[in-house]
Image (tube, rainbow, N blue to C red; front, side, top):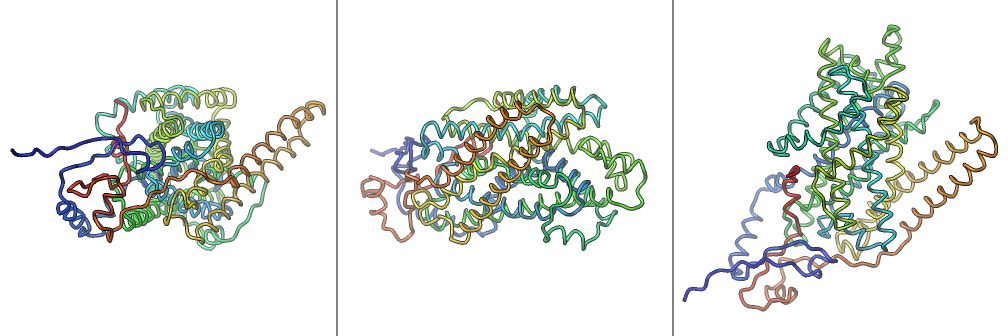
Length: 549
């Protein structure tokens, strides 16, 4: 009697993936060792460039956030107010981002879990909820520039008031629902093309205005903070680059690829993700450099007209099309408005994915993506609407800067757990950071946190000294704010010095292990039972990341 081949699908025990993961893996109980070996041998014979292409995607999706309306606004303000002096902040920011984004990818590949899942396993209940609230607040802070940027784009294209555009951005959810039938990958491609068109325009304009190369190089490598508000602007520039929710997102997106559970495959995957992230971030870095260079060159010219000088003094996302008139002429407003609209939509997609992953990881709760998008967008619309009604477009542009500064203060609550986990033997095993990466990442992290605290204290004390409130009111404000600052510092110290206790790393399969030993480790008999769950766990919903159903 012929025995039919059976395919059994069951939940892999927590010992296999570590923790209480509910991911499902397929186990073929009738596959022969020879077939498995042939499959592995065939996979190993693939050209390295083909292997690399199979890992391309997560880094480029994450990098969309670095060309969002928040980044555009901070770049424009930096160029107009400080010319090339703060380019070094951008260079340090993108260097740090390359390190921590690669660490986030390595964490997901090596542990089979994304950052929010590991936080849920590692930290006590109340700490876990506090980290979740900080992560959600970061997502909302990142969504505010998208709301305001989209409103500015609608104002440019259709000449409607900014506050009306803010209300219309609430319909962004319906737009995503309408476009889902075409597939998210095609949507991402369209958005990327539109953003690259705007980038190409800025590169063309940079070639036209010819910023002085010596000043650009000096700005990149000679640190300088001069002028009123320079520290706050530098903090906003860092917040527009180092985004905490992107760390959660990147560590989850890498789980969309099947990575064989072997030392060599894990090392290859980490290297491929580093190359992909590096290329995507270099492109984003050059685009940001071009925007600052164009803004700085035009707004610091000696022979500019009074009209240009007035526009530079009031430069924001809504008035920026004049910077591209040399290249695009009268069509500059239309092309810029469409590209700005696309930039807001791309950031909205990444924020929605981040929020979904954060909620699912911390709370083990999943909601439809359009509901998630609507919830975040409604919260972000409230301050944007109030400010745009009271203070107009100038106030709305200022709100973008404030929200990016808030992101800088939220970074430690995602960054410190990432650095702790990626430096941890119980989490990463042999794939933990080298001593060089450890020193560089912690040094930059301490410097960023110190910079945050310095600005926060000096700005608040300066406000207390120069405001016109009665002395008794200042005393009450100080009694409230200074303890909150102390709590902020103590929370960071707790995360930094707390010892990890949860072990999630499991020994990967090595090619020199006998099949019998491998089967024994997985609790199988030594017949022809070959486990096929020898991949880093992944979820199908991350493979295509579909839009709402």
